[in-house]
Image (cartoon, rainbow, N blue to C red):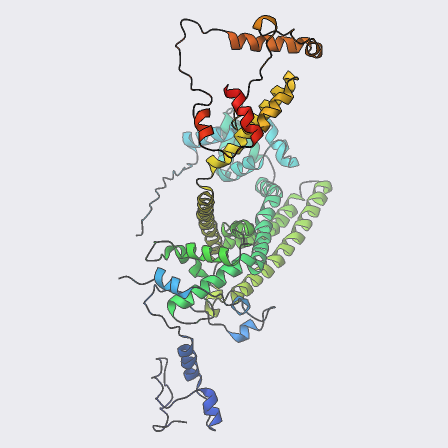
Length: 574
């Protein structure tokens, strides 16, 4: 197997081994020569050398982390493989990438000032009395508070009022004894508002237990919603990431580009590199790598979407702290257990009706909390399988946060949508520019025929309106010496007796005209024969046939006319 001597000793530690000697050949050749197979480290080195891509120029590097899959861990997942095993190889224009990303050789710190105000509650004296009086403004009248607490009537007092009493207005034992002593010492003098309020609260048996049980009863629906909705969003987000077609195409395109730029063929990259894609720019146009990815994806598959609109659950999950969700779930469990203890204490002083009603409520809550715990455990286990599917290393799965992964994917999708819209606008502008170049210079010639058609239509309407002499107009238009295209011809009205324009010169024609036709003809005649006023400037009008040659020159030029047309022209000239 080794032509130049015995093989080197095996490596003794984590440092990389020395390069193989010149006589080392492939694993297949070694097996054919009868020798043992290559060691694993030499096989990996050989595969890496074979996967190195040849480039003519140095290009920008993508500093991602290569996926190293644990086969034993992957075999335990439902798919038995990672997402990188399912992606196909995308052919990229290596020359273009080499030109765009050729290597041609601040973060701004935001400070947020939060000014918090600490409200300090001092027990007793004037400050304590003032705090009680301020808190009473947000509560119902003192005479109704005791009844509301005993019946747990939320129509009288809201959850904010309960929390206000629990946090700042609970009477202490020393305060209760001092107020009662003062009342016994001065029975004729009424107590102040703050003292009377504290004395009323102190008269309620098991006040704190009642308030906390009531608060849990009012809070439960909201707490359950704050736990259940994020879990459902995360479940839907994992489905969107696994099954989104556009996301797969973008990953495959980005992987092919990165393999070429790095010059090494790798299986995949860790998903956190998506946050750095918009920061990589080419060295020619200064466009981001994401811009070129969008352009390639739209060219190869126009049916892809903007990605961001299809991963709504991922975006919602990126705004949730799932550690807080777990804390809220554990808080629900502890509050439910404490509520059972509160109910046992309250039941000693209240009737059985209240006890039965609260017992049914707490039993239902306990059952639902157990179901939420099971759902939370299953969803988080499924998220860990998603990390394995995305190629996350084994040692980092336990420390990877849900919010971090979802935020990376959501922000990348938002950047992709913005860049995709910009690329679409550029492509539309180029298409419109090409269309304008095709039709440039043709608009004037195209509008001539439309103008002629309108004039012909108006001429036709006038002929229909005038009725008679239509045949004369047709004959005049049918000859070569009719009208110039696009110009109207005024029909010649035969002169009446005495050489005037007489409407009554032809009896037959007069019978065919209606009164409306007569009025129109009279107005036309008056308009045609009216002399311009003295104040109007006289404008020199161009002759209708000013651009035509004279008849004599026309006859001498030798036009190809028929004999009948020559006789007609001779008669007109004489």
